[in-house]
Amino acid sequence: MKFANSVDKILPKPLKSSIDLGLNRRNYAQFRLILIFVMTLIVTLPVVIVAGLGYYYYKDLLQREELDQLQWQLDGKVKSIEALIDNLTSVVQFTARSDRYRELVVGSNLEKLFVRLKRQYPLFADLGVIDHVGIQQNYWGPYDLKGTDYSQEDWFEELSDKGLHISGVYAGNRQVPHFSIAVTNQDPITGEMWLLRATIDALTLQKFIDTIKTNASDDLFLVDETGTIQTLSRYYGPILTQFSSTFDAGVQAVITDDGEKVFQIKEKVKNSPWSLVLVKKQYIHHEHWLKFRTKLLITIVICISIIFLVVFTLAGALTTLIRKAEETQLTMLSEAEHTNKLASIGRLAAGVGHEINNPLAIIDQKTGLIEDLLLMSDAEFEHKETIQGCLKVINQSIERCKAITHRLLGFARRTDVRQEVLQVNDVIREVLTFLDNSMTFRKIGIKLQLEENLSPVTSDQLQLQQIFLNIINNAIDAIDKDGEITIMSHMLAGDVRVVIQDNGPGIAPDILPHIFEPFYTTKETGKGTGLGLSITYGLVKKLGGEITVHSRVGQGTAFTITIPLQSKKNDQG
Image 1 (spheres, one colour):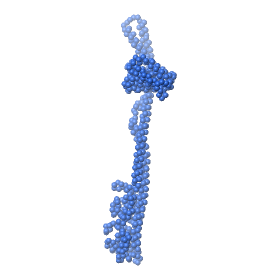
Image 2 (cartoon, one colour):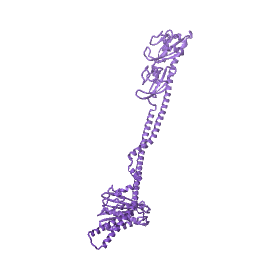
Image 3 (cartoon, one colour):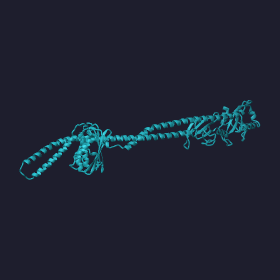
């Protein structure tokens, strides 16, 4: 064993280190997780990007279409309000003809006019006639406003310049929201300007807004130039309250107090102090958007699930292939190590055999000389028999050493394969005739399961005999007594396969990897050299075959030898 362990020093360092590194196998579970993560990330990222772009652009397209549709609806509603204002203005302007000033400021003519006007337009609240200096000359309505001076009012100065004034909604003396329309004309007699001012209830605007309001808008109301609400707003409060969001005409997206995103669209109403505001909290095509978003989410989930399943399967397959490749590499490295060790041992054995044979020859010669001298001497002396006995033991030890060195030289010698056509079954039966007495003496039975009509092989008969002899001898030594050896032969993948199986004690798992190593033996001292299986391994390899061993403690051992139909010349040492 000391000699066998010292052989490790002969093994080349690069090969030995590569095998040692190969034993430190990677963590395949961690490698598989990393592979799954990287592959999933690489494949999923484009899917997420494409889905994100589709989500963004479809939402943007839907918003644009939504805003265009809301703007179109708002334009229609603004035009309706403008038509209402134009209609009211036309009525007031028609009433304020240039030749009616004198008529309207005297008697009950203004009252009669208001009654006729009220009959057709019940939305009017009162009428007033104002002269060129701002004094109300006549009034018909719920208050006593005749003689009131309006010369300091802003609207009076504006009316003098433009000839028409429409006020915003205000509460006034009645504390009832209303607005007024005032127009100017010129008295043909005096040539002076006079005004007709009509007050209209704000409910008129509210009713009209309610009429033009549709499901396309969540809220629709009027605001003036200062942001004061002119009609009731569903979200921003009653009339004459301040609109919380002031912005110029156009579209604005805002976040409400409850965190909801809404669109506000505002457009100026011509010839009035008002702007119409439309508020929309959801898309008109909200259901289409929800369906698209749901389908997109389901598609992404399905795609990612399929991707993960495929990646998981591929990662498992790749990990298995890599593990098998590494195991194959380690096996090849281990075989290379073993082959290299056998070659190194062979070279060492040749040198040891030659070096030992020389002193053995000298010892043999000297012991022979001593024996001859003892035989030539007739004189008896003390311990003569003891000396002769010692010489006999020395001769026996010399013969044993010669046998060992002969095997060493046979193990190291590079002999050519002698090709001949033969039947493997015949070689097996011939070897068994050599061992018949030994098996009979130990009561070991032999069971042959040899396939008939095996294809003949071209190989070396003597080396095949040596292979079978060594393995069967090992089986006999393992069983010792009262056992059975089974020998099977059959064709497999174009080669002849021979299995030699015994029911002996088996080989321990920690010993099994070393049985083909030179000088490795589990037999008692003096009963084996540890070269039998090493030589057998070398012979099998030399013939181009393979040899493997399987063993279970307590059940037995089986050697499997694969012999090619055409042996290869393999110069294994």
